[in-house]
Structure formats: C-alpha cells, structure tokens
Image (tube, rainbow, N blue to C red):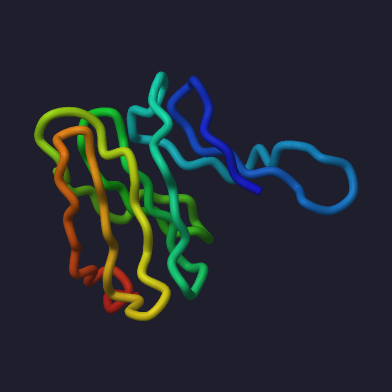
Length: 112
C-alpha cells in the first residue's frame, strides 16, 4: 500500500506481515500537503504518477524512486486527479481545480 503524507511525500508500506513503512522507498519532490491529490500506477507497475498542489503532474520510476518527469498540468489550483488508462498504457488523464480534464500522451513508458 502507498499513502500521501503531510511532509510532501508518497510513502510505501509493507502489505504482508507487520504493517510498517518501507523507509527505503519514498517519492518526493511534489507539494501535496493539505490536498487530496490522487496517485496512480502504470498498467505495468513500473511507474507512479501523482498530481500536486501547484497544478503539476509528476512521474517516478517505481524501482528507483527517482523523479522521471514533471509537467505543468493545470493552471489555477492543484492537479487533484490522475489516472493511467487501463486500455492504452501511453495515456494519462488529469483533472484540476481549474475545471479542466486533460489527456496526456505519455512517452515515459516508451523511454524505458
């Protein structure tokens, strides 16, 4: 399982045995404190995407935890939702407080 935290990080927890944080796997660089910005995994499980409070869309490599790409997704307010298409793995959809829904043709999957 993953969760957001008030220290602007996405944290990972063990799903078997004792429930505890995996301190070696943490995704940072985005601003989410105070916002319920959604996160999503690529269909392959290789990438994690998340909106942030400044209207950006972030991508991380799941294995390394490194930031892979960042886009200015929405202009007036946070990027609240993001979903990877289950049908087309090169497509991510976002929505924001600016009232818009945007489709992103994702070249990230093709890079790796």
